[in-house]
Image (tube, rainbow, N blue to C red):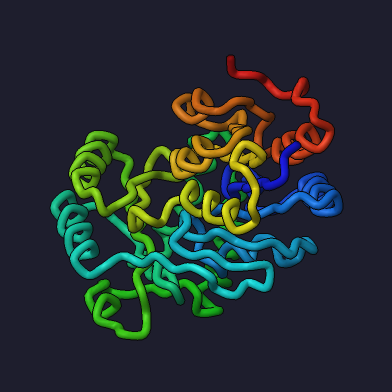
Length: 295
């Protein structure tokens, strides 16, 4: 029986309005009631992740920033794996050589150069999944984050790198140019100290190599004395691959790209159809017949 479940957020737990459905909430609480350990595993920063679930009566530990930060059920930081100065310098040089737009995630804030580009990122993610985003609702949520100070618009990132009281945890780059994305990925992948993944077709997420969802899931399983064979991961994109590979039961969303769904044991329905709930219900009933099986 599954004893630990790790769930991605965007494209998985959340719908295109970045909300959690009642069925998904009920399924997670049902798992918790049966003694199953459930954790969120997201590329989002802590505050972004918290904002999405705090009104849903979900008190869950969080794997944030693809594993660069881990928080317990009380949301106290237990692990941080930041990017080092030399890594930041290398990443910045490669991205700037291709004139690629990027955001900087620290352990305190997310820094951007243009809030309209931030909006476009969310729109692109939804559209690439064949879904229609609620643009005005997303715009309001972005402005709310700016007003709260968790999302900060700046002229450049140089001063951020000099701050002694903030650690750079992740860098997220975006582009509509697939050739440019491939070149940057290839250059970044030459460094064995970096983990290079993505959460949509048009972005690249860069963290310390120790900051990966799969590494984080393994650490949690070890701490709880749970065999990885008894763990399940649910995700939809490339930054979920590391956790889909290490668990005993891997589930991809119907809206996943082929390269991701091909790696999973099962495929559930889309994030708009409560695919997370269906996967959890299947695991609790030990009956995966309602999911598509990858043989």
